[in-house]
Image (cartoon, rainbow over all chains, first blue to last red; front, top):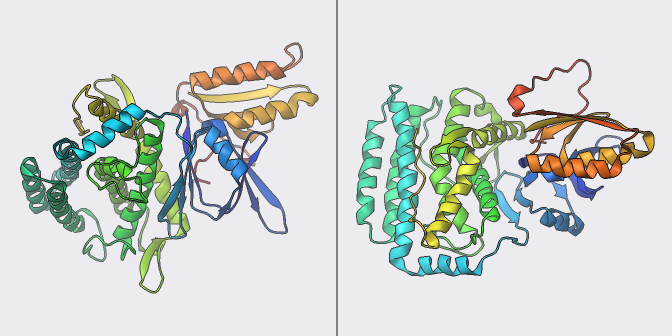
Length: 336
Length: 87
């Protein structure tokens, strides 16, 4: 059972004795070796300053290991996406066909947005049942959901989603026990604790989704809700949209409300003050995030337990079935 | 499934066994490894082990658990290596 490895230390990643080694110089020139069982690696998340060479990259490619790199501030900077083993020209043609035909594209994009809003409402309902005043936000989200069917193009979908999210983020002040109120979602750079956590969590989820897409035959650059732009694997953005409220937001609520991570775990860096997680807190968050991904639920159709991470992959498989005309795509919605 | 493997092999084969296990599991102590494996990974590992071992002299014990949560681990004294995915 492959696992994700999150490497915060700095050092050199090496291929040695046919497995992975992290070598790190500690004081007085001594080198600490940390072996990592290669057969057990699904993907690597590099946060530290890591040296590596092409020998290592081809070794990782052999084992189909995707490597995600994050910069000093914990922002996603890119992935090593090994040569695809599972390619399908047939599916790629279908993927593009569904992008070019605006009706077909809308059908898929709507599902993504609908599911994302559905899960946002789930989160809000959860807190309403616990006596938080989030009714206003729920109304806005539901109104947006109602208007989705009439949306004519992707821009309109995006607008509905944006409105719903704005109301949702306003409700954060009710949900979270914060010293300073959460004003609005700000990126690049995040301006407060909540934004920093959301940014960090979203980039982890984006990378995890990309790893899952890698296993399937889908081409990660052709997307439906987001424009398939340059530089990014935008299909991962599309699919992770569905899971953000369930995985990232809930993890953020948990770490803040349980006091696992607090104001003291952040630091302001840069000319335009950005707020960033300190290393120890980032590790804590990653652990929480990973345990959210590993949490399992009983799948009704498959009749077995699947983890959230596997649900992401199942989503990709459902999309493939849709594109090949086997079954129309119904985005994942929590059923419990 | 969660697997614990301990081995007692003649010195000339120790390194090879250790190196093989390192590819699949986490080293926890001299001659002891543990970690998460699938059924097929364990089969592969067994085949490879048999290629190295002298079955007349060496011995490898494999303990398997359906899930990590059934393993309660206590450490007395030094913890030699951490089984962690956040490094």
